[in-house]
Length: 320
Image 1 (spheres, rainbow, N blue to C red):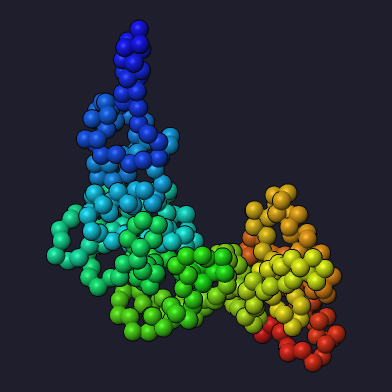
Image 2 (image 1 turned 90 degrees about the vertical axis):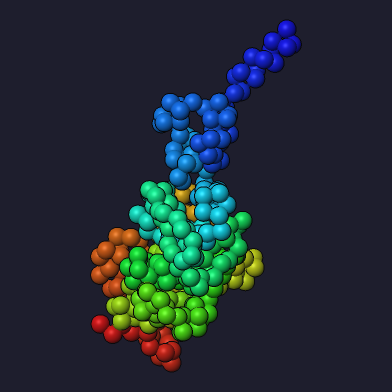
């Protein structure tokens, strides 16, 4: 009975594929997966000759790791794949989830063809960076690649992200990127230099970038990004998305995550503190980005009010 039970259990376990991993075709056959089953909707091909479960797929890092170690040994993960692994704010249309292939760079002396799931770039002189168990191209090389793919504002958002106060790994200030870019000779370098001129440190989200650029393009001066404000009673520290500090005007972007009950409680506590300290809080949404006239009218009104209260403060008037 025991032997029979073990045999039945072994038969049931044969062909069971662990979730969130990548397997070669030969490996799946050895596990008992038939060719017919492999060609079904149960599996997704993620690299030439490599598959993952459709319902419980491997993540991008795992697919990139397999690509680097087994499909293109010694290759360097690059381009938008490296950008996504660095968690840069790419537009949805150029992400792996949206169908973008894995990008890998190899030296000119090596031979390897691209495939539907794998794009090969042949270049020399690129610098590697160890990141979460994968060798990826360094941030400057990634930005140079992105410069030929993204529009100006999206490229600025990626530079801002590298200098974000929330970034714990692979942080690179705008100043450091500017210096590294000075002697670069590569496609995309002009677009990257133009984006650097509009980039800033301590910007935490693409919408903060978009709001900052919106202000600059309508003649307002550069606001302070993520200005710290401490509650003198509790000692709690909060961060203003964008601030005109001398005028005590706080500009907060309200994205869809701000409408959850928890985030609304946090926003309420921050607003209450700012009002207590004499700040004006203006909230801007994606609709305001499309039609900013009403937002600018409110901003101008509060700038004039602040100026009348403190004639000695530096002007923050729009040059429109």
